[in-house]
Image (tube, rainbow, N blue to C red; front, top):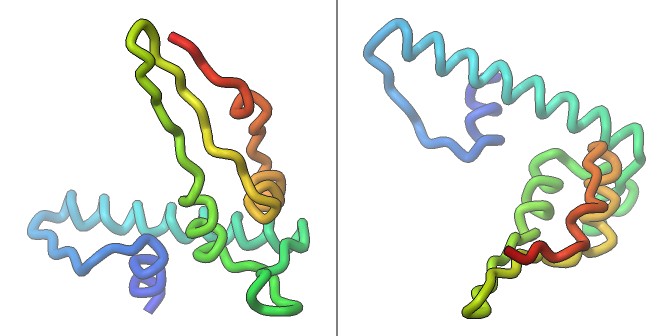
Length: 113
């Protein structure tokens, strides 16, 4: 049952392995995913990041990842150079990144190459 939950969290389809090494690798990845999910849940609970759609409920790791997936890194080609920018974060995304201990200070400066 836990494998089903972990694979659903990761958005994986059923995977069938035919060698012991691949089965062990798959199980290891599932355990790592479960650990990351638990750490995220603890961090979000400690920071009291509420789900904006569900009053009084802490946001789930799945919902947090879906919200963070909306952040984009964009490369703009200006002909002579390339400018890289990261989209602005909304208030919820800022709370999530802070709760998860992710430093975004460098994200607000465009990189010109």
